[in-house]
Length: 84
Image (tube, rainbow, N blue to C red; front, side, top):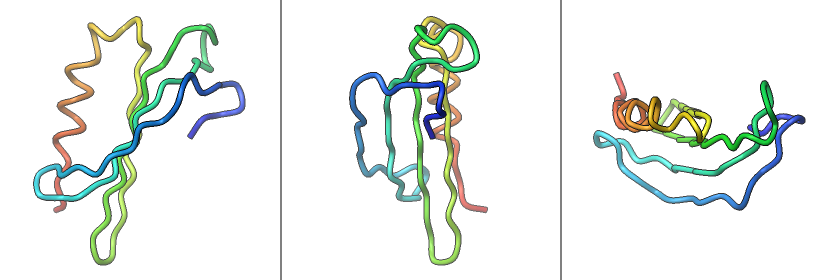
């Protein structure tokens, strides 16, 4: 999920987690920005959910310098996943 204009900053962290009864793989990492100044770190999370016949991949990101605006919403969105 890192485009050609972005670079990974550090490594990935992986963990299994459960959101509203759904198991998922949570992958967190930091990368450089691609649309604006490429020196601005971007916080990213990928969550992969799978049941018997469906798979959902959620990708969320925000610029690190805008954490005060987005971090709380980022966590709420991530924790709001439900199979319907």
